[in-house]
Image 1 (cartoon, rainbow, N blue to C red):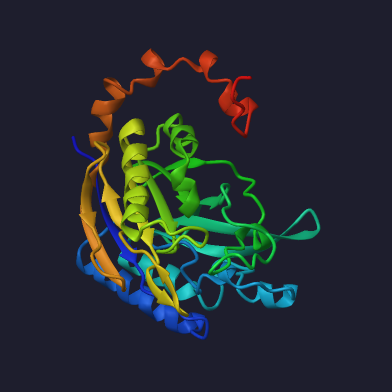
Image 2: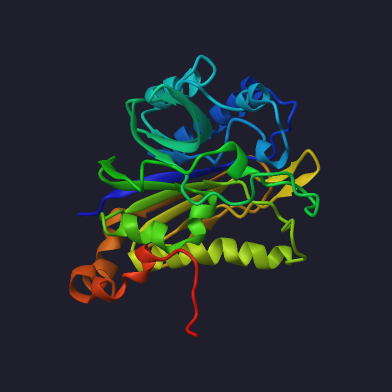
Length: 311
């Protein structure tokens, strides 16, 4: 018996710095309505879906930085998303900047949540692989200050059983690291959702845009294939305040094949019927972890961060 989850990848076009959350929420509600019309069970939004990609700006005033963060989820502004999802009977993944008090101190994370069909948050993830730098760099065409504004996530890579499957999440740069997929693969993940805001141009090199898109897709395809899981990667795309973000949102099957892809740089919904039972073949054959993995030979992966060649 198949376990089909109809997934909508809700790519979003650019969000300008001056654009308020209310206008963004209206765009997201329109995408949810389209997903409902197409009988989606689950909608995946991008990373930092509620605002522009603010880490491209250098800010010293913490109060200014904090205006880009959400101190409650849902909030008065975001509650309509939860209400609509519950009314439609569909779940959603949402990426946002989280400001939370823990152990008596404020903490800032690049966060995603998974909301089920009842409108309840059932899983939270905080980004672990933060890219970029933490101080102003005059050598860059644009800044990438995630290390300045966010802390490394402290929740690991959790998964949960919901919507008839095992679901997991990550964010943007996490997709480039095989450990991301494997840690969730070892927990039996069947659908891995990730949002991203990725510049079309590398601020430190003349790397071609087509090569960056290739890397964007190949990492998700490899992660899907090597862990026999569905991967749903969703972009915020287009020109934000004269900074170009790549699109290329995709739904990837456990075979590593792209089954749906966005072809614009604007708000766009792509839909695929994802049979979670398609994960079984890979897990019972070439990627049968219990039969073939040899963790006693993988110790360097957790004992060492940087590469050290032999002398």
